Image (cartoon, rainbow, N blue to C red):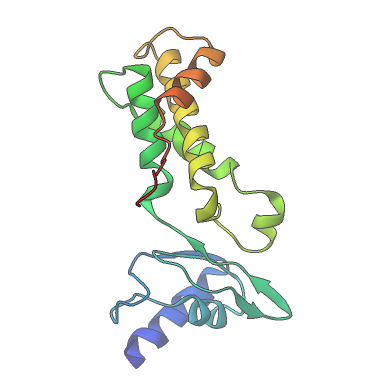
Length: 170
């Protein structure tokens, strides 16, 4: 990052007091907006940081800060599955809000305390399942989805999920 960009970003982040920074560029991209270790350093540990690709945790002030991976893979698989299960003719703003609120609820208090803004990527299947349920339920509540009970929605989501099974190659 050019010196002027570093100085400008540092000034802005310090003036904000507490910032949420989601750098969308890939870690390997030389044009990344900022890397987590820099943002945390510039803000003296007062920024909540997520990135478009995986980063190692950052140590600052005696604590380890987990860097979340902000990726559309957290919302869209569950969003699509929920809309399909509900047979919703369209996707409403309320369905997106239900997905976002469900995603936020997947981050535990201990993860939040560690600086995480997103669940771990390894939990993606469970997160997608929860989001699909929330989206299908919102579609039903909004009059755009099938009139399924919560239990029926759960079963329909589970039944509609693809389960990777690989046979022997030899």
